[in-house]
Image (cartoon, rainbow, N blue to C red):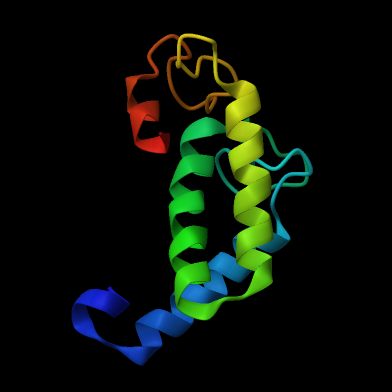
Length: 107
């Protein structure tokens, strides 16, 4: 939105969201599924989406926290990826675990 509308408030909100996501990033490097909770489960799709945001924030700000969080997320995604390229492990518990076509966006 900041890029499209040019609003500084949108950019500040993106920074706040990216920082918050980095602060609550799961120890393994993933982004949690579902709502914020104290017993998080990792999710491939969420990790891929937030990784896109961290990459954009890093390009815009140069802040190391976004590069480091993105690096950890990318490594985790690679560890979860099957040899044939699929992600069938660590999918959100909100969806059918055998239907993971949406994970292509994480790629």
